[in-house]
Length: 182
Image (tube, rainbow, N blue to C red; front, side):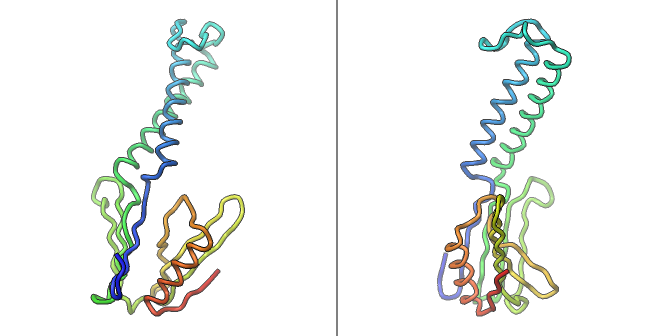
């Protein structure tokens, strides 16, 4: 929702294609490891493509079972983050009411809803941080009084340089605040 007085940017959160992909791959791999470990213990092939007679239960079968359980647990955790839309939300900048609202969903519990509100008068600047390399980081921060810097961009999949510069410039112009680059 964009108008002359209200800007709203949606944040995707954990419901990304990559998370579906990794939850599926890690779950399938974990199940394969667990069935292979159990096959070595039972001396019976639970998977037709594995020959358990070639694998001793201790230490190989035991370790494979352990890694299989870890893989299944991690896949289950990732599936829960997808199911509960962890990280999904929005950033709303409202000139009519004079507030900035940052909303995100978390895991179920007393802190399921993360809903932060700030006055437009508390905003000092919009800061953009670029870190290139193996793990690039491109983040827009909202700098408020009290030396707080609140990240506004999604985590995991950095925006392109053009997208981040455009979004930061539009936001700084809309809020009539300074734009700082690091």
